[in-house]
Length: 82
Image (tube, rainbow, N blue to C red):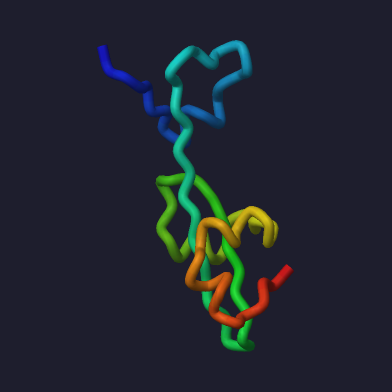
């Protein structure tokens, strides 16, 4: 028996809360972008999307969520674009 049951993004959108079982795993992808104006931002989305699709259409993380994930950007002197 596998340790985890990875749920494909398309399946996750069809699931109801009652469908969730122990060891179900719901992966996401996070992409950070260093902007042109001395800023940066981070976005997340489903793993079946490309990095570019996440950057263009993903949901934006808050600064508090993004900074621990991207140490280099958060300490680069750039400000987080809210």
